[in-house]
Image (cartoon, rainbow, N blue to C red; front, side, top):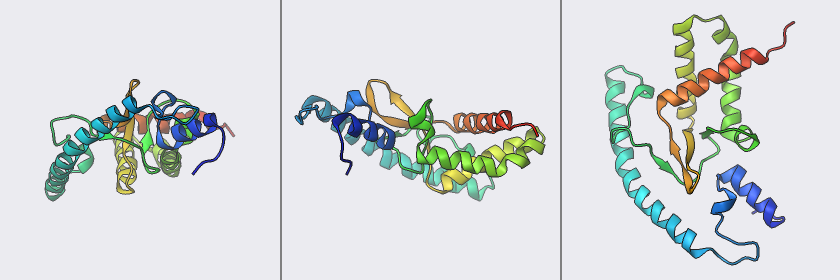
Length: 185
């Protein structure tokens, strides 16, 4: 529970749970915006039905790829590429976006710390090894329960998982940014 002004509660809901102000279901005086709330519940019900089927298909696909010796990070979505809908990000998730709420999200902080731990190896590596290190970071984040998420759309509440290529691009960019911000000795 967060105590504070209405504005402070909205900020906390956005930074921790990803609920933007315009999708907050309570007004400042405490009354509920029922139309928004019912639309949100309907979306969740639809997506949860798809998510259960998709999760089982993806799990079977990843298990099959692992048996063949392939890395599961390269797997396609089980339903042909449709991103999975996520109502609220967890602390393990990496959120794609700009600004302090994204930068300070716990999953993003863990992602940057993991990248920093591999930074010396990345700086000394050739192109192929850099790709391997990038995939290693992604796999470690996923093994710890993290997903790479972006906003579903500005008018909708929720998040979508991104393709592995997008996660790889974000991770590689963070490696490069860390190298640029190192101070010369």
